[in-house]
Length: 362
Ligand SMILES: [Zn+2]
Image 1 (cartoon, helix red, strand yellow):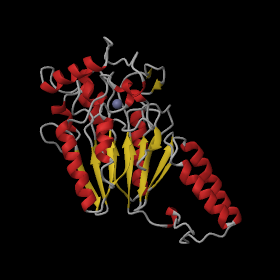
Image 2 (spheres, rainbow, N blue to C red):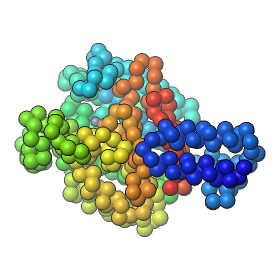
Image 3 (cartoon, rainbow, N blue to C red):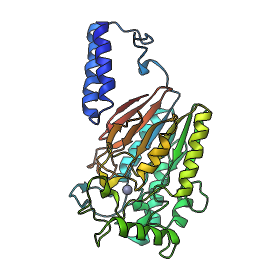
Image 4 (cartoon, rainbow, N blue to C red):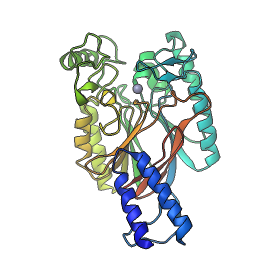
């Protein structure tokens, strides 16, 4: 029987490195069934290959996740691909998420992955809409960390957003890091640091970013990826890049994590790996960012939002990439939020409803 367990565990481990987490979920269920029906398994028992069940140990801490709320007090609509969007319902997803996280009783902090308000929100109502969602997040028993998404920037300039979202900032840049315990560091990127969105029209970043888009995207509508091939489809107006100064900050922060023997989790509105998201959703310079990340051993996982359907993969360096399913696209009564149990050797995302659960072993 023990051979069967080891065999199943190795399949599960392999399957978590593929893009198809549905298969790994199925295998985990199969594995659980095999334990419950055929084998008396002591919770603290180590397996011959050195693995033990994470469920037998208490997490170091847990944190909550939600993405792409895109709230607006407007009737339901559809994405440009025809996917239904429930603008008024998404705030109810936040309400249920906060209630659930508070009931859990042991969630240290929450991370909102950006796009708190939708671009269709009438501009005079933007601040009220953002504040309304923030009031719901304020009911959470712990700090909430926010990041900037493209829809936030359609509604409000950085000068308004950064204080509203209480993002620690230098020069209106919105990248920062924090360490919830000595073993872990969270690095939050500003994915629109270099972008044609959010800076004043005559700002040097806006001018340079528009020039960059003209070179990379021949369409008159720069939101359109038509004619662009493969990962080049990311060169659209609704995406952005990590700027040079932020890249240097990222490298310095990760170097420090390595020296302190910390695990790092990178959070970004825009996804960083083509295996976890559509090419149209990627950070313009995801390759440059990943080149830096791959220089260090500390980064174990990268979380993102933006690509509403969600996704998961493990890259060539064993880093887990999890793009989270959007709260906006939950039909009334359904949810997409979760929490992550953090261990020294794994992250275990427990998703609600439309957010898939994911075991990330490293
Ligand atoms: Zn977005």
